[in-house]
Structures are given as structure tokens and as C-alpha cells.
Image (cartoon, rainbow, N blue to C red):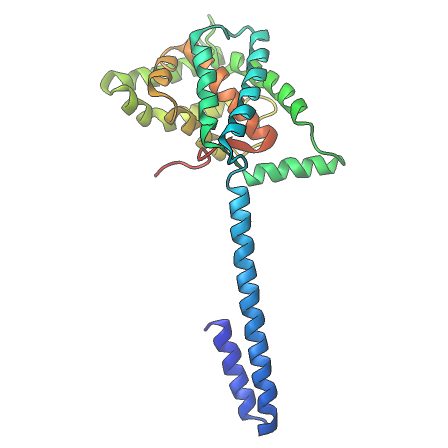
Length: 269
């Protein structure tokens, strides 16, 4: 039974049990209670809609999102160069352009991550310096990219194992499918492999939910330009450059500000 019906039923019983002179007071109470209930319901609905509208997309202005991402990519590339990654290669340049292109539809806020960042800042009595976060995290991510996604002479090296596994997965799919179909087929598998490796990098684990990270990275692979993604991910060396140029800026933005390319926090059914 709804709240309004319960109130009216209770009021009727009360009216039947008292004198006629009290009926007016009961009716007044019912009307007042009903009005208050309706007002609360309306205001609650407005509040929910407002929150949903505000938090669904932080940078609804795509130009602002692109500028923001371009700055992050530039900082990431600068740090990657220090780690010896080939930032002058076409694979790196195309990967950086892909990361920026993802921002053209805006950036969505991951509310839980953004709230954790805010709470951490309030614990020390001030807002975290986003620039300092990016500097430290970009260094960790690019170092981790070399460690966990770049092939080495030693076949048992973690970077060799992961990059070879990812490239082998892509090559096997390409052997029987076209580029776009191959990407769609392996995006979840590669997204998981990427998340597993990224989570080993200090500064990542404990800063974001692994399931969320896996969804984001699955979308990075699945929504990337299929020509670029299949070419980059088909060789162990290309895997390292893909992670460094495309994945690192997106992970940094997620952890430092709780932002990802719009729609990347969910997977299509």
C-alpha cells in the first residue's frame, strides 16, 4: 500500500472513532501530510536528476576535454622519452593522437574515484596538486611500461611474456578475421591483460578499482582505430608503444582526477 493510501486510511479510521467536530482537524492533517509528501517527492526527484546531470559528464565541452587530454599526453610523452621509449616513432605519435581523439566526446567523471581523491586531499587539509600527481604517476607508468610491456632479450622477463602474449593473441585473431572483427573479438581479453600488468605498477593498485580499470582498457582497445590498434598490438615492441602512448595518459587521468573518455566506464552488452 502506498504512503498516501495509508495516510488516508488511517485518517478515515481516526475520523470514525471521534466526534464530528474532530473530522475537520483530521482532514486538515491528511491534506497537509499529503502536500508535504508530494513536495518531498518532487524535490527529491529534482535533486537526483540534477546530480545525475552534473556528474554524468564533467567536460561536456569537447574542446575543453581535448585540450586537457592533449596536455596530459604531452607530459606523458616527455616522461616516456626519459625512459627511452621511442616517442619519435609513428606508432607512438599515432597512439598519442588516438588518446586525444578519445576525448572528443568529452570526459566522464568516475564519482567514486573523484570522491576518494577529494577525501584524501581533505585528510591532509588541502587539495591534492593535480600537476604533482601527473608528474609522479607518469614517471611510474612509463617506467612500468618498460618493465611490464616491453620485450627484453630474456624470454622469461615479465615485459617479454606480457607483450608476447598480447601480440600473439592479436595475430591469432587476425589470421582468421579482418581488422575490425579481430579487435572486437580480443578487446576483452587484451583489456584484462593490460589491466593485470598496469596493476603491478606502484601508484596504480589501491588507487582505482581493477574491474573499472579493465572496462576502461577494454574500451581503449575496442574503440581504437582498428587499423592502428591491430598493427600496434601485433608485435611485442608495438605493444609497449601502444601502452605507453595510448594507455598511460588515460590511466593517469583516471587516477589523478577520476576522469575517463566519455562512455569508457561501461562495456557494451
